[in-house]
Image (cartoon, rainbow, N blue to C red; front, side, top):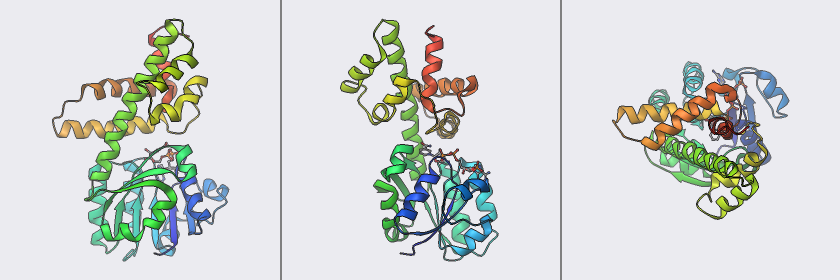
Length: 287
Ligand SMILES: NC(=O)c1ccc[n+]([C@@H]2O[C@H](COP(=O)([O-])OP(=O)(O)OC[C@H]3O[C@@H](n4cnc5c(N)ncnc54)[C@H](OP(=O)(O)O)[C@@H]3O)[C@@H](O)[C@H]2O)c1
């Protein structure tokens, strides 16, 4: 397996994932649109995106959304990229991944679509869950790389499947976080302290990876960003498009989607998505 990796996108997730590859002795170089983040990362960096792509064999993108991915790959597609391997780990629409695959393969490059489940704490520990679609032989060749970033790695077949499953997962994430926040507020309105409500939920019906990872943040009303509301709203928008396109009925999702649109437009777009708690506090007159 080539150990020569170019990393594009040093946000909350990408910065930690790139560092894990460097710590595992991958020969990594990074590039970020805001170049200062690349300089501050302590990792070898290039001044230009084009320089990075031409120098490295495996290129990984971890960007905010489908629009950013399209913009960056339009620049990459102008370059000589034959035989290079591209992995996009951004959460995008299934159609974005399929379109990208078609264009990259036509240029003689390889492509894997590999969105991730899990947030900053798991990214830091290299314990993400990674969903991979694309060429199975390339996937097998890169298992060593994926195992540095993730603990559970699923190969899922054709392009589009990994992204569909990622969006399905995040629709559950939104509904679950809404239900947990609602339960905490109702408990408080009934005069039960937040800590007790959370303790009972985590031993009862609320026991979940979502509560496990967010209980301290919910308890302390700490909305510092691991996964921003605006990125979750982006995922819910992509999921909504899939539902509309396929005429699917998803009532729980519809409420979560509206609640998150409201969280986003009420000043919490850059905060962690657990800030939905504040919206539910307002609805229930809890200040
Ligand atoms: N955070 C999480 O917990 C989490 C968990 C699972 C999956 N995800 C998904 O993983 C992806 C990254 O998430 P994140 O939280 O790391 O995002 P983030 O902190 O907002 O970082 C976004 C990155 O994308 C870059 N970017 C945005 N627009 C760009 C453009 N037009 N051209 C070039 N670069 C651009 C940003 O560059 P600048 O620094 O220049 O702004 C930054 O490096 C998202 O798709 C998200 O949905 C996130």
